[in-house]
Length: 237
Image (cartoon, rainbow, N blue to C red; front, side, top):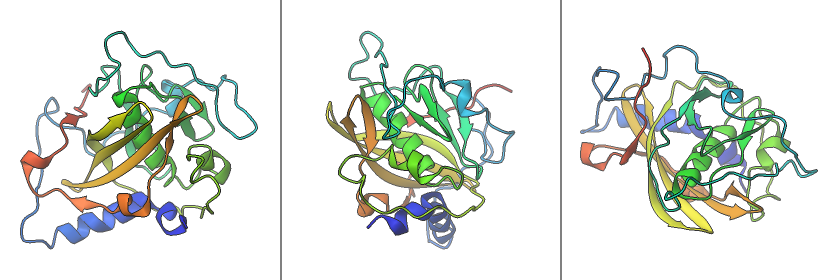
């Protein structure tokens, strides 16, 4: 059953962060120059997903878009943060990165599909799917289209609207093959970083969300050296 973890993964992350504040040692992030850290989750409104994703692609009866994302030459096994990423946000305010080159390149309602078939694309897909599954305005049909065939038959609860003052800090590829990847995602909230592991699998030309419940248990990052290696730095003023 996926009901409990579908309702609000990002809300659970927020609870984990608040719990971490009671721990003996928690890694805090002071105010830093914009070139060295991602902007706060309460920063100015993020652009729409439509800023990088097209809504004109062919979509099947199952809600899955027909994808054809080209991996840049020499980047077939690269896990680097996309050079062209920008910020999008869920209807509840959680901010996450999107890329015109690595995905999502197709918008289907409130969700994004079509990611590059390399480690970076897997990371961007894991991040986008995690946020889509917690978006209170994304209908079941859109969220279900992001799931692997292994999970597609599981029941979904509609996420309840909950303010999510969070933003993706970075990611790290825990394991990768052309067929599947596990991505550790660091999420910043109230200057504390929580981590959640997400698995995706390559099916029908795109990465699909395939996590077990145990992989969505958030952990507080308490050591600076344990932070994700791939970090989304702030851009702009």
